[in-house]
Image (cartoon, rainbow, N blue to C red; front, side):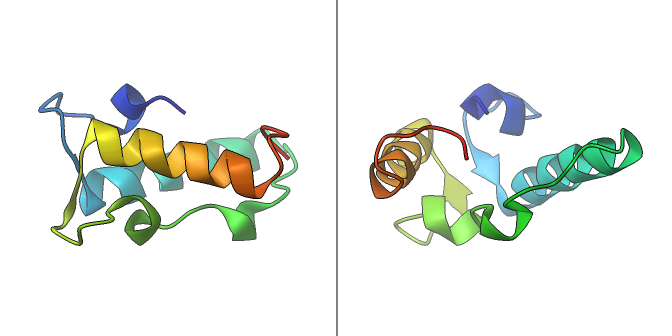
Length: 79
């Protein structure tokens, strides 16, 4: 998902509350649509992206985290 999808108040920062809220909404929507939730257990937590541990995710931190996750999966994109 794009950074902007998590930055619900459009302040160029993702808070833990924003991150968790969007994540929960997505999981609920998938469950309601009876869509399989494969790899839900592997979904990244807030701390994966908040590399400097200041309680906020910047766009740079988010992009770096996404890139690292893709590299860990061998560049396969979504699983």
